[in-house]
Structure formats: structure tokens, C-alpha cells
Amino acid sequence: MSEQTKNPFTWVEIYVTDMSRARKFYETVLEITLSELPMPEGMGDMQMFSFPWAEGESNISGALVKMENMNPGAGGTLVYFTCNDCSIEESRVEVAGGKVLQSKMSIGTYGFCSIVMDTEGNTVGLHSMN
Image (cartoon, rainbow, N blue to C red; front, side):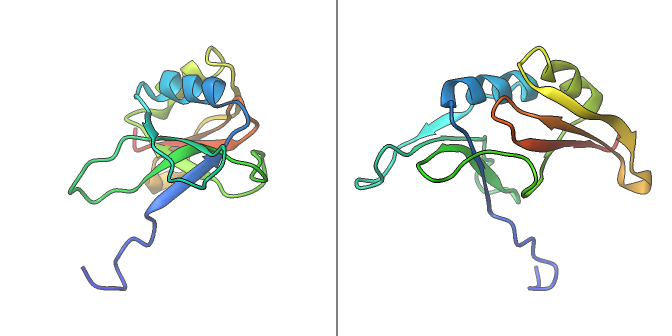
């Protein structure tokens, strides 16, 4: 893969204030299991739960992060999660304690997306081709 076509993303951090609540939200909406990451010595009370990672595959991953001076909220970076049909994950958002900000909408040849707010106030996107 040339430098021009290489995907520059490697990691995403979604900041949270209540790890248990945020973890339950993402595990419920995306039907996944997050894994606790051990923190190196000297990291204070930092806590991280990682999204699934396909070892050896072309993908990125990330984590929910509870960390002093890093607060959740809307208006910053928008992370999109890949879905088979984003309306399915969207249907689980409010039950999981979040809010649907934009129901599934067409984005033309790029598929469909929904915009939701998690339990921590972060805005995230759901994307699908169907």
C-alpha cells in the first residue's frame, strides 16, 4: 500500500466520566464486548476499555477512556461505527440510555448514517451501506 492510499487512522479515544455506564451503552448498541486494557505504572487513575480489534487485519480500534482533564462532549471529533444497517443499532440507542440526534438518512452513493449521543454526551455516528 502506498503512502498516498494508506489509511492514517490507527486509534480512537472516546472520553467518558462514568466508565460502567458508557461501557454498557456501547456494548448494548453495537452488540460487542469491550476489553479492559491494563494501564502502565504512573498513569494515575486512567481507565481504558478497548473496542474489538482484528489482529493482522486492515482495521483501526480505539477505547473508552476515563482520564483526568479529558472530558466527553459534543462538538469535537465525530467517530463513525460501521454497521450492516445503521437503523438496527440506532433502534438500541435510547434503550441503552442515549439519544438519537439524526435518524438514519441517505448520504447518496456513500450509504446511510445515523447520528446519536451516548450516555456521556459524546456525539457518534453509525454508518452502513444498506
